[in-house]
Length: 357
Ligand code: UD1
Image (cartoon, rainbow, N blue to C red; front, side):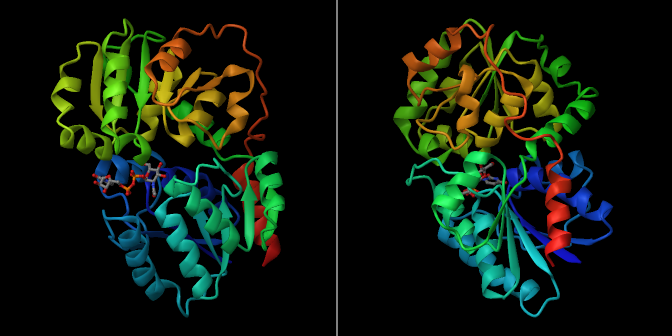
């Protein structure tokens, strides 16, 4: 079998890594097509290095731009590789612009499409990721749903493709990264002690595009007694700069501002943090798997499993709510160990792929 993966952004690379290994282990061929949506070393190449992935077979070098620009350019540039090709299946991952563009291209070029991480919904129709998820799910022939909720969602929406419950890739990704993260010296480099800091990430357009939200975040973290480590996404840095707030943030004595970092160092930081404050989808799950209390600075989440037992608290970007969640006692929280499957998802997906074609 010849399987192609279309990836382009940080979370796509992370999810593709175990699938790549599983496809090769099954004796099949895997071709990696990188759209280039993320092009900075810290958002792209470092993930190939961290997961020991080969260089992509094809680079489309699309780069930054509006969603229309990115999706349109990927469609044009991808057709050359997909039309008339002998791929048995194209895989796309998650909910980025590269995911949707890969899905449309495969569909228009008459190649079967598999969606890894299908069926997630936040019900926030203002999120670009929500549009990407819904559209991709309705184009896919094979939908790999990470949770039982996702399966229910897809059945409820009567998608045309075949739905499979597979568990979530995060379980095996986190397990592998944790082992490698033992060699990470990031805590030492930053002079941090286990459970003595909060980890903060923020990059969602809904947060970065609002000056009020950035001001509210500054107000929240300014007076925290615990140190805050903030690996800053280029989009977020640009937003702080454009709103004239970067100097204020850089001046906070209790905030350690560092550039976006690779997955292994990030795992080391997450696993040793007291709590994590984030608007990322993936980090909510990773925190749950590592049993790190998570504060999600959004009003909704597609990963509702993480809310159970209070492991994840939705606060929006609201200073009072965030402080309350920071102070919440997390000692006796109930935990569901298999909320995201048994850690065998990449093999389950590969077995399905090899049996359906
Ligand atoms: C994208 C995904 C989001 C994912 C996130 C992880 C979409 C719609 N969103 O958001 O789901 O959680 O990646 O990082 O696909 N930029 C750089 N360097 C880069 C890439 C981007 O400086 O390597 C800057 C550019 O100014 C760009 C902006 O970040 O315009 C936004 O990048 P984009 O790829 O549109 O979305 P992300 O915010 O990264």
